[in-house]
Length: 274
Image: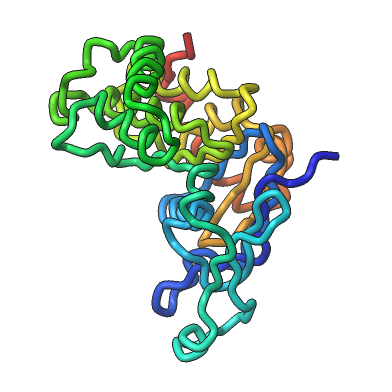
């Protein structure tokens, strides 16, 4: 059995008195697709941000390839004073870790003053060490496959939301992350743009990249995932393969959530993937 690529042990994230993430434990195998679903405000984005160290956990431990990445004393009610005297410990070289674990955010995070090509090659040159010529060559090839060749000289403000999201995905693909975290990458897009973005994600399945995505698009999660996590109020209420989550969940809360969302998608008759 393969070792877990990414593991979370009793992870918690606290803002003020609110436990946004509450005792989450996960084991992610390499090359798999894991979807995180749940109501808005359940902590999905925060959980992804903790995985890639954009936010630091307040309790628990994260491991990568069985090696500790970050840890913090596990205590159900740590005070502010306790956190100050026993802060989170970062146990890896953060830039090196972020070269392995990357995230595509909802807001694309493209540099507004740079054109599309410069946005895409920036990380390749400064984080991956590619020469500018090699970075441009690889970027043009990938952008061509994604139908973005005619946009290379445009700034992000000249693109549609779907085009900006495709650029953000192209940038992530070119960084060759071992783990790619996707945060609601189809949200706020029109149906045609959703299909474009979904097809890019489908193309990654079986590529060796480990995918973890937070999504409200349950039919997509059901089709693409090896495992689905249901997160409610920062805690996992159910976890399993799509058959389990959609047909025999252990939690009544999960059953109500998935059946309600799936009925909404059926009623709206979304277009099929092409």
